[in-house]
Image (cartoon, rainbow, N blue to C red; front, side, top):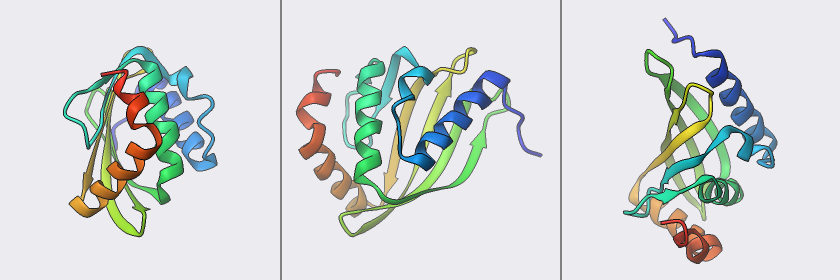
Length: 140
């Protein structure tokens, strides 16, 4: 039986899916807590703050090709959501998950990404490094 998400979380998740579908993340800051934490699949240290997460996600949406969400899972309380995806980067196919934690108001407080295989992860890391590597380090 699917988990019913609390209304504020469902609203934010619906907005997220609409932004991804349109490839327009201009409304993204509205669903992220100012003190959010972003955990990149290629960095040991988390990045802190809304601006870091907006920068990373707004960039990666232009790096990924053929990005598609496949499945969605949620904890019983609905505050933790896992979105499984597939994409291509530089000719490399990859699969991954977005692990998203929401607060009671439906704002994203943590966003962690895991990706496989290593060749896809390396292609993503290389491209993201070229585009925002130095700027993103300011948030660690």
